[in-house]
Length: 183
Image 1 (cartoon, rainbow, N blue to C red):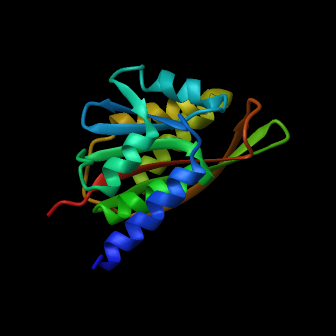
Image 2 (tube, one colour; image 1 turned 45 degrees about the vertical axis):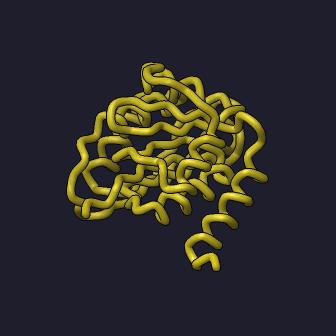
């Protein structure tokens, strides 16, 4: 008889696989982090540039399957994807014992993009400063700051909103950083 966790993971896995088209995202391993990057939007290339194109890439399907079968073992997970693609991954990460350290929503309208950042105060401040300096190339600065962040004990939470110029792309993107909860 399946337990509650198995039913939930199976449901999330089914929803995620249906929602994500083939090659909907890549997973790269850079240092101690798994980096998930969605396909099909302009900011993706800049995010990858910020990641310095290191590591090996595989399909997101592999990341979802690994999470659902408890074989996903990395201290940190960083992502930039369309919100509909990010949601099932975030749910599976929480269920796999990860803690969300940073989350940002990126809303694109009329040549501008509004960034709503939430997370540890120092990280939010550093990301906001970098994003405001880089303008339309915000995704590269975001990737660099999330990858170079030293894991730490969660501290004071903060939120911040700012706007930058935007390239054409989807109306809603989501970025996040999850870290493995220490036992």
